Image 1 (cartoon, each protein chain N blue to C red):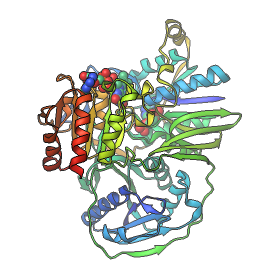
Image 2: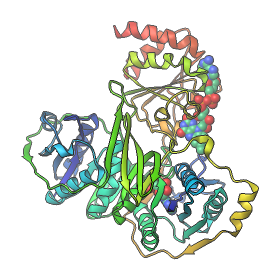
Image 3: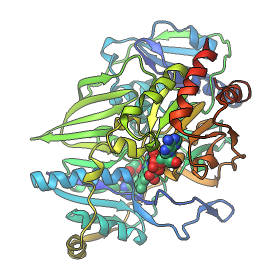
Image 4: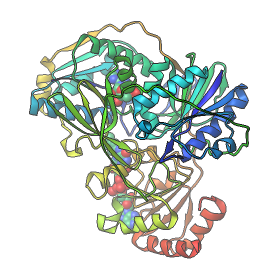
Amino acid sequence: MSILVYTESENNNFKKNALEVLSYGKALSKIMNEKVVCVSFNIDNTEDLSLHGADKSIIINDTSLADFKAKTYSNCISKIAKKEKSKIIILSSSADCRYLAPLLAVELDSSYSPNVVDLPKSSNPLVVKRTCFTNKAFSFSELNSEINIIGLSNNAFGVHENQSETTFENEKIELIEDTIKINSTEKITGKVTIADADIVISGGRGLKGPENWHLIEDLAEVLGAATACSKPVSDMGWRPHSEHVGQTGKPVASNLYIAIGVSGAIQHIAGINSSKVKVVVNNDPEAPFFKAADYGVIGDAFEVVPKLIKKLKAFKN
Amino acid sequence: MNILVCISNVPDTTTKINFINNDSEFDTNGVQYIINPNDEFGLTRAIWFQQKKGAKVTVLTVGESSCEPIMRKCLAIGADKAIRIDAIPTDGFFVANQVSEICKKNNYDLIIAGRESIDYNGGMVPGILAGLLNYNFVTNCIQLEIDQNIAVASREIDGGKEILSSKLPIIIGAQKGLVEEKDLIIPNMRGIMQARQKPLDVIRPINIQAKSIIKSFEKPKPKGEVKLVPSDNVDELINLLHNEAKVI
Ligand SMILES: Cc1cc2nc3c(=O)[nH]c(=O)nc-3n(C[C@H](O)[C@H](O)[C@H](O)COP(=O)(O)OP(=O)(O)OC[C@H]3O[C@@H](n4cnc5c(N)ncnc54)[C@H](O)[C@@H]3O)c2cc1C
Ligand SMILES: Nc1ncnc2c1ncn2[C@@H]1O[C@H](COP(=O)(O)O)[C@@H](O)[C@H]1O
């Protein structure tokens, strides 16, 4: 028996969420008295696995797995899960993991709960705490299959060091044919994505027009943050759809979320509420965002933000 | 081309969420229901294929009779036919298995569901359905073209997009971007009248066990008061974020 953690990688390096799911798996392995086994594809440097608690690491190096393919990846993970007799499988909430999780669940005839925010409330029966109603509530769900898949919310558990003795195995797996063809991939490089960011800076209609977005971008640059926007801003084409956050957009679970000229409609707040610290800059003291925020500045974004950028630059130096 | 669109009946996005019976049940009192926004994007794209390419569009929900107004709305938007599987949708596995039964009996070329529902947020039904039927599957879909029997779909990934192609049949997890906001169809009087004449079949569910049970709900802890910082003192804000919140 074991707990299996899928430690995701990109360009032969672990993603940040790989170490978070491993940290979670380690904590769970202590509660359940099981070994924690990691499965990774195409990875060179495995030091991080020992540092974060892996008892065993299974590495599948195969150039035909260079591109993520949901069906092939889920098939590989399911084979490892069977071999390791895994009772619990832990995945992250990345776009790729949310893509493959239901396929994996069918292969293993297992249950699956995404958006899990904490260690299980009980391990027998397995009861997990997860968000529902787009962050407006939590549910305690009992997962009652032989094998259960937990999808951990981004940033919900954090990365914790836990030096362990790890045994390493290289595994060769016969790959199934994936009948979907990847024609092309466009990925913005050198820019922090909303999914990975510790800090997200978001702009709303209060910024008046796309020509003013340098305020958001400059602030994001000083803080090493990702940029985001409210729904109307992307609907009007001021910003790309991929930046739209909220109930019908991307979820945000960063450490710091700064909203500038965003009113704080219930649909917006729902999507960003899992962020730990929220700051709002708005010239209307009645804006609903002030009720959801930790820190607020009542003021004109066109005056406050340039000052903030200047002072932050000085602070960073 | 035959298209199936899976519809989830969800509380309106402005709903305040409350629970009853010792936090074991969602309080539906006074709640307005809508078509799950991701499903509405999918349905709109399906209607486009109907108008431009003569596709036939069926909408399907797993739910009790209280879902019927939403199904009539889908018919008023333009779907040709509706099916309701008469059961309480207990979890994503249960729903996907019910939908899969319908799919086995019909030859759908394209099956569209939402990327996720805004109530349960499972993001499970389209993927599980794909697994059960062994059909190709693309989720977070922001673009979909079909030429002969080949679908070309774009998937939003963290930090970009990926363009994929597949033979039909295919299952799509729809989301915002698949159609423009302005192209969402608001039913007109004619559509509403026609919807009354269109078939809405009620089908009995198959016997299948859910794989998870919600034991109870909890609401997030109420937030403390916001700390206001004067707009002429951003130094104080930086100080608070650095020393108190420790996030910069
Ligand atoms: C089905 C549905 C789903 C939705 N999903 C989402 C979603 O996922 N995400 C989302 O964001 N919205 C969503 N919405 C829309 C939501 O209801 C709001 O309309 C939207 O969030 C408002 O965007 P905003 O705050 O940018 O604009 P506004 O509401 O127009 O607010 C602009 C704010 O800027 C402030 N302001 C103006 N000038 C300045 C200045 N000079 N300096 C500082 N502040 C200034 C104003 O006081 C105001 O508070 C959804 C709506 C529906 C119906
Ligand atoms: N009860 C249901 N009946 C029909 N389709 C559903 C139902 N629940 C979910 N779906 C579909 O599956 C998608 C994802 O839902 P979920 O897995 O609950 O996040 C939704 O957007 C719908 O398209």
